[in-house]
Every structure is written in structure tokens, then in C-alpha cells.
Image (tube, rainbow, N blue to C red):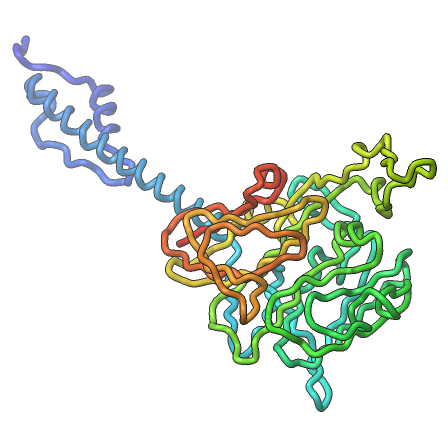
Length: 398
């Protein structure tokens, strides 16, 4: 007998249709109770269309869940790579986080007069990693790092800094601090001006005035001693303290990797026949010193690979120092934010509001900024060559 206006669905077709009903989330769509064998062509088409729409909807929901999971995974990976600035200046400003950006060394306090003592060991030819690509640098470093430790003290402290010139070194070294102190403690002349290998010298002074200062070796050729890494930051806090906020230290520097060009810089030769005539050096242009890598805190693109996490609405303080050799100026520009800049961080300095500062070598200041907008924001040198060669970083405001 023939059945007109009916369709016959084979078992294979039935299995195929039923398999469509198995949704991605593991649930089933309710199958109409009407017998497949007695369903009209139009009704079957409508049912299949409805099931297909449900399947498409569930597939879309699954894709959205997968995208959300991928975003969460990416955020977790970013958070694991981020550097969090949790330290707050309070009764104890001495914070050791294991990361130079947020570590402050207050030394040890001893004696009846509360002398604050630090120890710096000058070591030559220390292999230091300076990029993620594997470049290393034969550093001359205080305590094995570039920059050296951030020394922190309070205005009026009796301070002693003992510098030990490692016995395996070849050259004399010293410590010169930018602040007020006696001439014999200036690290230029006398016993403290050239500490021989295997010897030590203790610099003694009263910490003043409040501010942020570089310290560095002052033995000639000074450019080589600084380029090799013998520098760091010294912070003198005011007696009345500073407003509490999370803090960071950023030291801008570069690396001239051409060790063979190191050496004393001399005045041009004198033309004895005519002293008014300049004696040109045929190799003068070839002797120009240039940096191949630029960084903040000694590691190229360090805070690009590991962004600095900032909390939305929080105010942060940055102690900024420029120790770049062989270039006249360096700078820092922050995207998407303005900051209060206090030159040298001294009490009498008049702050300005800006988003970029330009510094000569040894210049420094304090930045205080509030993260008011969420998102990823670059901060970097505003000399494009410097950014392409390593001085590029990122804040992540959440």
C-alpha cells in the first residue's frame, strides 16, 4: 500500500537527526511526541528548523564561554607576569621584595647615636643579564647588581657606608654621593677617592638635605665606571616623613657594549708650531661612544614583558634618576596620565604638573601620579631610538 503525502524516514536518518539533538552542554532538546512516520513534510521541516536554531544558539553560547575562558586565562597569565607595587611608606620604609623596582635598603642601625650602616662591595667583571634575548654585560657593580642597592635614610641620620673593593679586582674604585658631606667623604680625593683592590673605606656623614640622589664611582675614566654599572640611588626622607603611598625606584641607564673603546679621554694634542691650530684626530669620529641598549633599572624591555600593575584610583610615588652615559639627555613620558614632578625631591623644590620630564646625567626627581583611567599605558623615553633599543615599559591599570 502506498501512503500519499507522507514521508518515510529511515533508521539512518533518524539517528542523524537525533544526533543533532545532543547539545554541547550535555543536555537534550525535547523531541516532539508526534510519530516521525506520520509527520507531514512541512511539519518535519519546521521541527528540523527549530532544532537547528536551538543547536546554533547553544553553539554560540559555547563559543562565548570559550572566549570568556580564554580571556580569563590571558588575564591570569598577565597577572602572573605583572609586578605589583604593594609597599607603602610608613613607620618602616625598609621594604625588600626581591625586585629592584620596589626594594629599599635601610641598612642596620647600631650604637648609642643610632648610626645607620651600609656595606657596598665593588666587584668587576660580573656577568649580568640585560635582555630577554640572552645578552649579557661584563659589569662592574656594587653588590652584584645594576643598579646598586637603593640606600634609604632619614634627614639627620648619622650614616656610615663601607665600600669594599674586592681583592680580585684590577682597578681602584670609590663612592661619590650627591648630597652635603665633608670633602674627605666625597669619594674624589684622599683615602676614599681611590680604594685599592682588597682594601675598604668607610664614608661617614650626616644625611642632608631630604631628597633623592645618585651615587656612583668617581675614579677616572668616570664614564667607564658608570657605564659598567657602578651607580645607584640614595633616598633621604624628611624628618617629618612623606605622605603614605606605594613607591617605586626607576634608574635610567644605557650600555656601550664596545669594551675596546674604554679608556681615558684626553684633550687634543697641541700643535707646537702654531698653538692656535687645532690638531684633528683622524679617528675622532670612529672613537665616538654610543649605547647599543637602553633600559630602566638595567634590563631592556623589562617592564614591557612584566608590566607594572597599578590599582585604579591609587596614587603612586616614583623616585626617578638618570644615569645614562654617552647621550646628552634622557626622558620619561607616561601615557594617559599626568603627574606632579618635584625636581630633586627636595623640600624647597617647586612641583610642576606634566606627563614628560627631560633629564641630564645625574639629574633626578620625584613623580607622584594617580591612576584615574583603566587600561594598558606605555611609559618610556621620548627619544625614539632609546625606546626601540630597550627603554620601553607598560603600566596596567585595573
